[in-house]
Length: 430
Image (cartoon, rainbow, N blue to C red; front, side):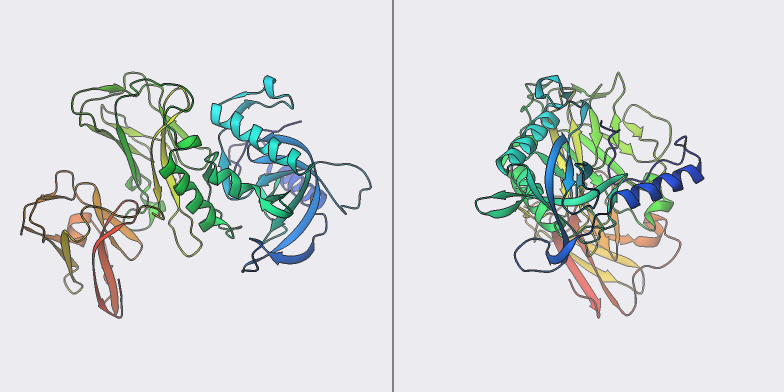
């Protein structure tokens, strides 16, 4: 009954389907899964824009924590039929065995709990659901991509909103169905701050080295064109303990899609040490690893709020460290106001000055300018009053100027996008 799990990624080009066969199958799916929609309504149900097309129906089964089968009203076939519907904008953890009986399912603990919660919500609505989408053609693989709502307290309540608020799912930004992007991301970051659901580091049971604190962060917008420098995109993991080493063998990193990197046997992180995981290909060393992907992982934010995150899970399935961007909740940093930045667009250079009465460590910060992020080198620390001049082209190997004479801005920021200092010139603004 259940097909293989996919998300919003396109089918891999090596999948063993002839192109012509694939086109025929796709056309058949699109034709078979396109019941007529009712009039448009507010996607978020509050009268605000954008507008969505609307369908209603009865949920006939629950696949997992982000997919259900729905018999859509008015589909014209005169019989009960389950269209697979993938919740837009959220990502539940995975199941390895799908079954309508809860006890016979297998998978990660968070995936099992998300599935059970969706079942509970569907039952509370007597299986009646409302589906909405900005585009009737929106798909996640062969499934319909829809926002799903159940009748709760006399009104339609969005299921994705409930799952995100309760910490059952990760935010999966959509550039095709962006109506809920900001809301889902906000709710997810609020759940993370509360440490509930996925965000509880021992929710699935005490994992290995539970007393060792860890940090993860990602370079999600490298200088230049991201797709031309896959290894310019990276994820770092740091052991924050001053005394304890930790084995990361069997631990894994993921983004909000289904892509994962599992650390090999023998991966150790000494006290205070940091390892780097590049997105592209290369030869692994003791503290440098390569995911082996041919595409970038992390989307740039842009006007549709396509944020994402880097997530580190232990072998039990607990989320032990995470970084989401852009920052929407608790967006403060002790180094805000501790540095000043001055831009020199004619020379393509930036001056960073410590204006605090204490040393400032910029090792985990970056310069952000016009869609590119330039990380400071490890060990970059400024004493009180100390200055650092950076030549963007020479220090970062850029082949062309990027500081527009007409105007722009440059800032010292954290990897979550918290601005520590900013300077603008010409028609630009901070």
